[in-house]
Length: 179
Image (cartoon, rainbow, N blue to C red; front, side, top):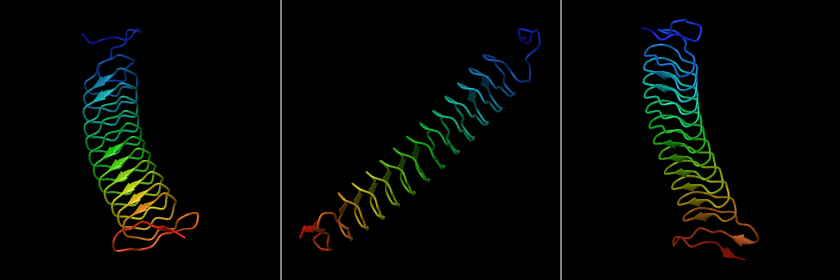
């Protein structure tokens, strides 16, 4: 027998109130369980489709809420985990694509937030770590390229230092000298 709502209506393939279980159709309340369709409430579990609330679990599609887990697609909230696509929220983990928030971890692409770790590309915030590219913020570490803020560390390239320090090029990778 199909479940009924407090008003006696059957809940088979339609929207559901909190705590309902549906295999195919939309749910908009917390604690819902759906195998195939869109969900917009917190604590939702979906195998295939969009979720827009915190604590969602999705295997294939976009998520826009915090604490989400997605294997393939975009996430725009904090605590997201993505293997292949762009993320724009804090504390994200991305293997291939751009991140623009603090605490990001990226192997290949640009980052513009503080505390960022990048193997190859530009960083523009304090506390950044970059192996190959330019950094214009303080406290940065760069192996190859220009830095223009105090406390910078560069092995090969120009730095404009504060308080009379002169940063010069040297083949022996020496630091700047005080003049």
